[in-house]
Image (cartoon, rainbow, N blue to C red):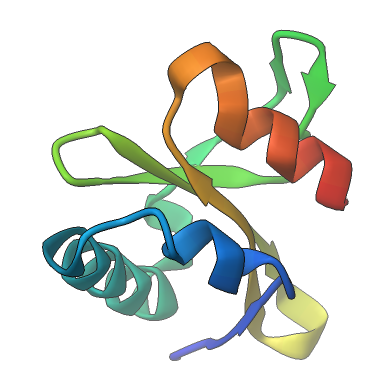
Length: 98
């Protein structure tokens, strides 16, 4: 079963900082997530950011993280943040958006 994917309104802003090549790598990961959303590693509490129920998937040799959750009753994947791990930036963004 393939899932639909929806994006947090600020994902467009997140994407602006990445190169064309990085965007293509992120898109490939989105395609994997839609087919097998359970591939992402479960997140819990990341340095004080409660991301229980969310998962992360890597792109660009683990330089970029995609934070998302599976919404089973709607058969959708909700991507809430994209970014680098530097100083937990991506997890901070995700925490603020949920």
